[in-house]
Length: 89
Image (tube, rainbow, N blue to C red):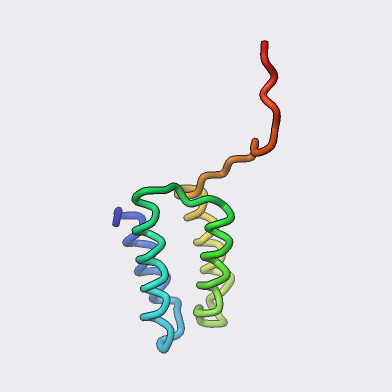
């Protein structure tokens, strides 16, 4: 796990409902491990967000959503050219 992932994990757990912290930690650690071999796609990120946001303290959802958006910019593959044709010169 890199420094940014450690910081995000600590931030996320701090903002997670106490009874859901172990579940959130497990989901994040699994995601971080997968990122060692594969860049997170936006589809992967969206799926991860769907799993994690229900675990967040209700009053912290907006803050965590913003942090996750920032995290996604650094750790997701944001390919926008899927399906586009590459013209040959």
